[in-house]
Structures are given as C-alpha cells and as structure tokens.
Length: 243
Image (cartoon, rainbow, N blue to C red; front, side, top):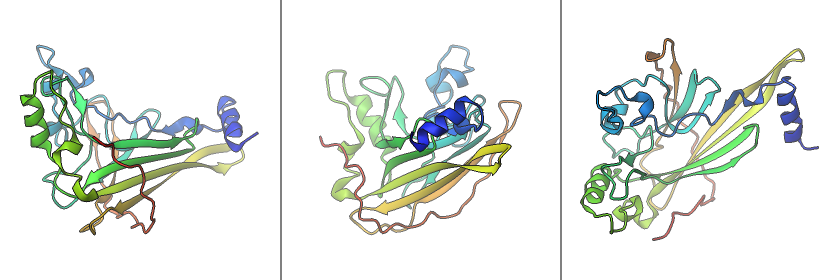
C-alpha cells in the first residue's frame, strides 16, 4: 500500500481532511452566468475581463494556478508582472463568444503537470511572455476573421519569438500536522520562475492570496508581495505548441 492509498483511506474514514485544500479555484469567473445580473442576460458584457481586476465577484473567485479550501473562503493564486504589461497578470485571458471567430476561447498556455487523487501534491506550469501581452491584437485580429479562417492564437502574435518567456512552476503539497486526536492537512506552496532565452529584467512572481468575507458579494483582499525564489534549474518545462 502506497502513502497515497493511506491518505485516501484516512480521508474516507474522516481521520484527515486531505481534500480540504485543492485546485478548486475557477479559471474564469468573469463573463459567467454566476456573475450575470444584466436585464437581458448578457453575461459576457455584464462582467468583462477588463473589469475583473477592479470589480468584486459575488459568487466566487478566479486565478492562475489557483488553490483554495473546499468552501473557497481562502483562495491563493498568482499575480505576475513582466515589467511591460499595463496590468498585473492575475487571471487567464480569453475571447468572449462574440469576439472569437469560432466563439469563446482562452488565449494562454498553461499545463496541469501532476496531481495525486487527494491533492496532497500538485504541480502546474504557466508560460508568461517577457514582452507585453497582446490583449488588443488578439481581440482585434480574431474579430476580423471569418468562421472559415483559422483562429489567431497567442503563438501567432510573435510574443514568444526567440523563446522569450518565463516558465512559472507552481508546486503545492499537503502534510499532516497536529496532535493524534486532531489531524489536519497543512498546505505548502513553492513558486519557481525560470527565464528562457533572454535574461529576464526581474522576477515576475507575486503570490496573491485573497480572503472572501460573507455575506457573498463583499470581500477583503490582502496581497503579500514576497518574491519567489529564483531558479537555476536547467529544466525546460513543457515546450510551446508548434504551428
């Protein structure tokens, strides 16, 4: 029997709440029917990606490499900045149903690399361009294309030319802590940033935890501006898709 089998049994017997923490945070809360209070039911335009950085969600949160408790009261995700973007990279960017020539579509590169059934260990990779993220180019070019044309992807913009991007690895793990009669999982996370090709100007990583208060619709947010450790690992991570 492996250690993970033991954790699964402990969870089933309610000895340890191994699944108290996990990758439960939504990848996209903006533009959803959950946040739609428009008169005509226009969810995409009622709460846009551009508004998400300055408006509070009512029924959830979203983020990159997001981790939360099972009731989503305490959420942890990344906030990134490459020194070029006009805004922090706090959530995945994508096109709405009317903007994409083939409907809604996320325009990012991210990978769920590993996870145990109890979420005792998780690993995630996000590829962040060193140049300014081409928000307007993606929207305008895709909007001009017809349904018979190929989609205009992030790789097509040239923002990854010469492999100029950051590999942002996020690893999280649970460990049993407490006394024999009150065991609970403790969450630990590591953020590792690897600059590819050109020497990055600075580490773009800022862990950004947020705490949701109740009643729903009101929240307090705190940001911790500690820097993640720089990596000297030669690992290349996951290669970008080829066109």
